[in-house]
Length: 129
Image 1: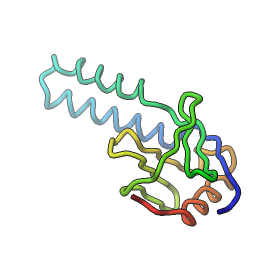
Image 2: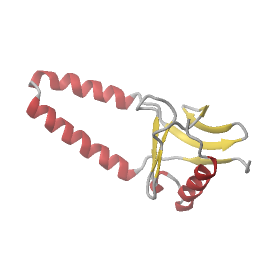
Image 3: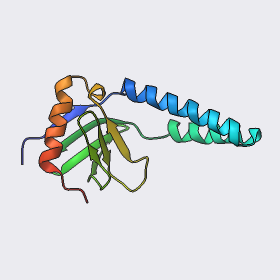
């Protein structure tokens, strides 16, 4: 196995813009099709889901395997089926729950070379389970 590696993650600007547009589209859709009195409850539930979703601040691999750092704690994970590796985006799932996924783009890293290095490490150790 190669030497340990880790990456510092930051929020992707492109991903934040996409999320904002999807939330606006959802709000318009709900406003048009749902009774107006259900909209605040749906918006509150969505806010809770987004607010309390654990943020992954670091990602790495060592002798024990892949790990994520959330809230200052390191959690070892195994990438699951449904994970995606594409030229401009990597989606890593470590659980069956949809909020246990990590969407990474080149702007999620401090340097442009970090995204390439991550993809290289993923390709050499890819064993979805």
